[in-house]
Image (cartoon, rainbow, N blue to C red; front, side, top):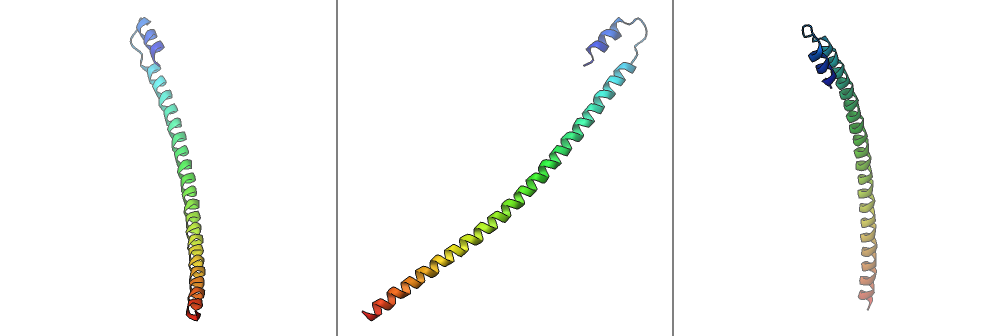
Length: 93
């Protein structure tokens, strides 16, 4: 990053000038801040997408559970009805 600046500083005959280093590090700090903002925004977007997906999954799970309960209840009612028929037939015999 600063290799060129170090070489220039070594080759200069005057006093050390920190301004090029400061400008360079300020530019890098600004780039890092931009990258941080992009990453934070991406994380927020992914968290929102995850929350929406989880909400959809929970709703689907509730629907599946309700459908299962209804199916099981119907199956037991049909079984109970059939058993009642068999019991009535057995009583007649």
